[in-house]
Length: 389
Image 1: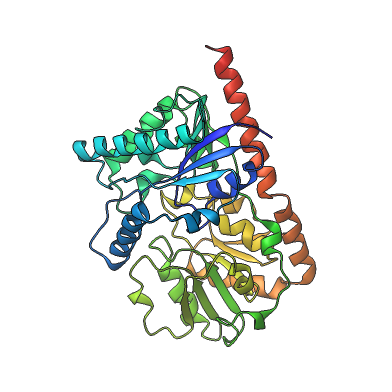
Image 2: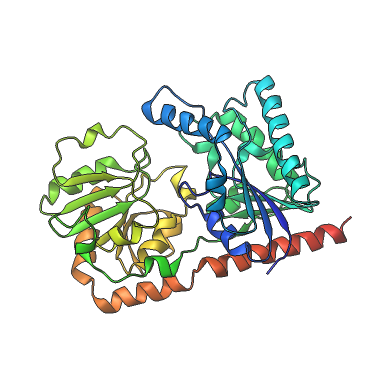
């Protein structure tokens, strides 16, 4: 395993564990990490969700207390530089750059870090990644950010093109992303998502979930953000076609879900902690990935796919390319009609032998094995850079 110092620009540490956070946790034993919490990709709107997130972010700038630091693993420090979400304004972009440079440089000095490896998993940090005399700059691409709802398309394109140009290595979590981020004949390296297998591999015990224990089985469940890329039309059709089924969308709600009002067998219990997530997933009879298939989602490699499999759950999904790869273990639906048929077939065929086979395939995608591949490609990139300079 690689031994070095890292600066990671990514999502907020601990808020909802991302693939980048899972990988970094595997690197902590032999590396020191400065993790830089970044702002969202899109301009905030006057919505309850966005206003709440904005307030949370402002509070984090001024109250990242020692108590919170004590809860962090060893070898990592989490930084919260002031970053305003209006990079389309030249002055704000310069202010953000100065703020990030000062905060990170001070942390490097205090921790005696020089020539780190810099990793970015978001594009809106493109201005910062070359400021710290990096041994290597790595772009870990996990989404097609230009297609994100509410994103400033031109700004995202500009910043991502700069990030691709200055990166010594590009890693991507989907084949579609690898093709889209190819530049000058250089293809990014495909790195799949993994799973904390021991976390999700728990005994099926419906009664342990207080949220779901009173629902009528079968429980057709989804966990994750309840966002606009969910195919609500498909879910509504299935719920009305099979009123005896209980549909559960378990997670934070960050879009208007009034379309679901009055549909009594669709339940939205809200957000649960990552710690308790397997407890509730164990009550599912089916794990759903009901995404609209569009330019954003064809590049998505859903973390929940391998997590469902680690639970032993049959998976029913929209025809996302990265899920279709697992068609031996997942049921793929091309429309709302085949969605219902796929759920029926998955319920009919499910048995303990199939559950064990799903767990066996999930076991091969441990975050440790993914982190080893991640680190191996970084080491190769550093070696190649040294040879070519």
